[in-house]
Amino acid sequence: MNERNISRPLVPGTEESGQPLVELTHVEKHFGDLHVLKDINLTVGKGEVLVIVGPSGSGKSTMCRTINRLETIDSGVIRIDGQPLPEEGKELANLRAEVGMVFQSFNLFANKTILDNVTLAPIKVRHMDKKAAEDMAMDLLDRVGVASQASKMPSQLSGGQQQRVAIARALAMKPKVMLFDEPTSALDPEMVNEVLDVMVQLAREGMTMLCVTHEMGFARKVADKVVFMADGQILEQASPEEFFEHPQTDRAKDFLSKILTH
Ligand SMILES: Nc1ncnc2c1ncn2[C@@H]1O[C@H](COP(=O)(O)OP(=O)(O)OP(=O)(O)O)[C@@H](O)[C@H]1O
Ligand SMILES: [Mg+2]
Image (cartoon, rainbow, N blue to C red; front, side, top):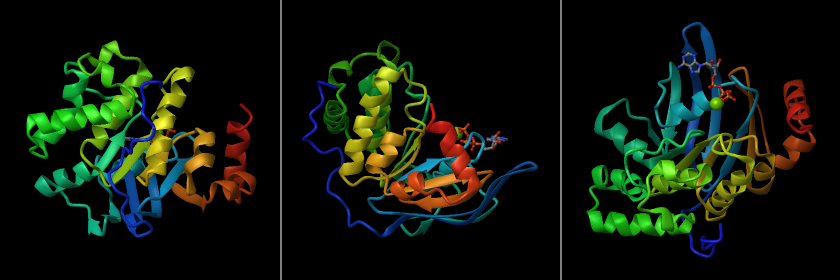
């Protein structure tokens, strides 16, 4: 992380905080017979950081994926900044550009350089000119500490570096909200912190974030709310202190006893 300059912001200007930016209301989803999301109601205010935890198969990834419509829903409403999610077409593409997503697997374009990975969408979707897109990309790569890797191919970078590029690539679209789905769980332990550091910085700069993660230190440090899911339902929503010290449900107590003991 020695390349990184912490003092420079990743997020331009903080929007007025508190207003709902992402709202899920009575969201239901099935995969065939499996009822994977059950009456999900969730509000993320501007500038809020939510950490989503829960056992494997509880629907965390599916819920994240519905927010940029990588998955459809059966019923209910999802709004981003007050607008219901568009069904398809140009409006959907515009919406996707407003929701940045970082996955467990880095998902960089393997046959493009790091720089091209970051400039591709701004040029294609935002119609930025190449020079402006490259300047912005270099700035973002610098801020996540990988500017010196710009001309390399993804396979030449470590997992932690690739994941930081994935974050820079998402930020290049100037998203209103960032979704992280277990962004550090495929990384070697020594690389986890370099990615979490970037996420902490983003959170502190006022980015609205939904993070599925088992990194409880991160949750305690930056989460405004911890959301506990089990069997497709949200069972608890509380501040990190409340959730970790006083979980209300047996499912959450059981979950915490398992993850906090190793
Ligand atoms: N495309 C799909 N088709 C059918 N079933 C699916 C599909 N995607 C997920 N599921 C099922 O939906 C349930 C919820 O999956 P999901 O990936 O959302 O869970 P998760 O909480 O993210 O779990 P993990 O912690 O293991 O990542 C699981 O039972 C899973 O097998
Ligand atoms: Mg998952």
